[in-house]
Length: 385
Image (cartoon, rainbow, N blue to C red; front, side, top):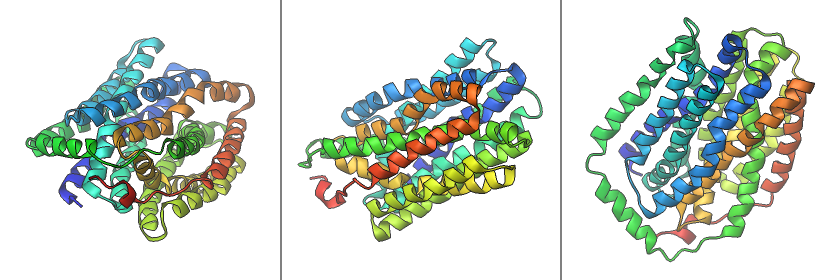
């Protein structure tokens, strides 16, 4: 394990996913300040994830054929730019476009960064979980960052949120000035690998992740509003429920990596989906902010137990195209749920947020059933020549 390299990549993941988390964290402020409806809010989630779903696999293909270190900092810098512009945009259209730019940056970042983290961590699931936890911590910090920067003024303060990306870009440049040769060597070795791609198994895993993404994005985008409106909580309580969900995802991701190294990836994936079902049901049935916080924490932990295992399993299913595998799976992890969010937003406008959460509980049930159909593929079977 290249701990220094893994640590640097984990830091960039924290910064990148800070901006991924800032989009849903800014939505309650946009509802209050601009009067957006649930449908309008869902449209912004679509802007953040819809474009990303299309281009992220393309970035993965590019990263497999032409590894470039600059894609990593360019990705999180573009994500920061979109968030900064979203708060100062003068219309819904310009806000939508700014958030779409942020989603494009997030799409550019994940495939090369995930592949680099796998190379730095080797066969260890713990290494991938540590990298993933960096992203989870960044996302968990987003509500607090949004409340700190925006809560005391207005959405016009969003340019200040770009500061972490600027600092990390300098750190990245200083730390990777001589890394291109190493990355090119890894790429050449991967191209000559005798390992084969298992597309059938990969598509089965992708279907499981689709069923994971819909409830994940729905809870991520609606938890704060659900708490403040349906459960009659304050805005601070709504932000706390969202923080519980995102922060516990870091615990689940780290725990999932450690567990997978002991009992295997498939057992960890199945356990996570099984535990997520009662946690989401509890959130649907909650009648006050406190039970919602507890259920959100349990849900975040359970849903992210399989996260690192799913990423490495996808890459082992497609050993000749690991960045493409990361691009498709990580793209699906947000994109499909984001693309369906306008429909769920309209359902929420007409029947309430609790109804939408009940619908995605059914989707998660189907994903759990599919998770029990997955098979493992050992790292040794896909080792580079």
